[in-house]
Image (cartoon, rainbow, N blue to C red; front, side):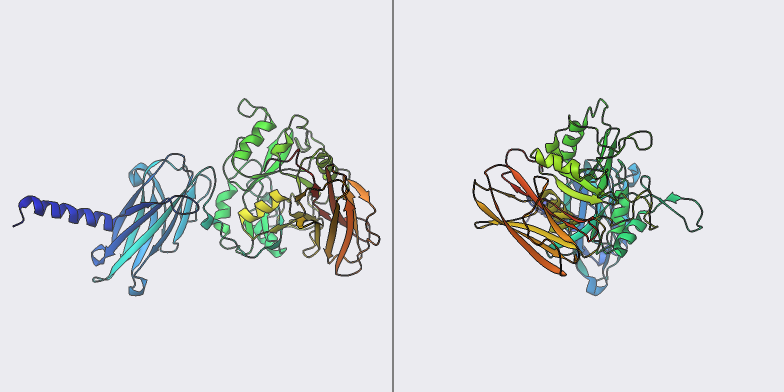
Length: 514
């Protein structure tokens, strides 16, 4: 016969089973984009119109929690609503949101959260999924699975960066603009005065212009992150990149690819110089480009010109804004500044940005011509944050000065069995020959120009572009030294239309920190 202790042990086992079945069983996963925790549980008719807590522990150092939730029984009208509680729950004012049954995936961080949830610090300790069961039939059963992802150092799991388009190709965007979260302003409905311009209008204008991505680069702040989290599902053809303009007394630079707050106070005890700022930015894995480097800096626009050199270690920079608004072919163009640093052996990607401050209105505004002018065009593996940033770092980029929507430029090199595109590095021995190719599209009437180490090179006999799609070729002999070669397209009026990034030759001694 079974004794009393056996029956007690059975009850302990039974209730232990119920506890784990009802609340959660935790499975740890490692590596890649696998969940850090997998919480599972079972429900029955007895759980109808009840609330359940599913506990899980968040370790120190986590700055984002992402939950992917699924359950069975929908065919029997089972419904599970979803929420989240931080340590201490309602008693500790740690309610972090309630999305009911309208979302199966959500994320929360200090800067942003899925709509229905509250951004704020991720405190280590015991958190709880909050489940509401408004309906489960008396004899029904259901199972749920919640995959929980912990992010650190501003990184996000891949499921939050699913490509808007999966195919590789050339994607067009604007990397520099401002809205209500800094000094962007526009005319309100009444038509009277100016008000901070809502982020929605910037996104809507970019979509109307046919852009594939934009970066919301407000000055020194990342408060726009929460608005981006809300807008991105609606703008499912327009990638909204994290960004801010690091705005200091000695220069401005965009930091793209992270929403983590960053101390920008160059000259303070905490950030003594730009090198300190750039090193801190590098830890976040973003892309840094110096903005409008050739500007007057003073009372009208403090820090607009780049005066931080020669102290700055340019290996900590990845790009230069060579066209800002409509400044191409002017004395304040960033192109000479960029090329002077290429001559020193730095690999820096040329980008463009409208620096738009008035999303709603077209025409001349503060010296600029609106979102998408110029356009930065990247050759990316897909349309996702990771792929666009990878393309920017690699220099697989050209700038469409007037934001034409369809003008195109490719500059490639071939030596032996090695093929290279803009931004790539090739090794070329003395007297070795390299075959270069320039492809243009929708630029008829203009002409191609080739620059070798910043100097115009007469290597194409007939540089005029006569057709909608045209290819030019030339062969170049190396001397074993370091060089950079790139292509531009100019219009019939001689103005720059397309600005290409270089193919780098023997660039192994000095390179940017990517």
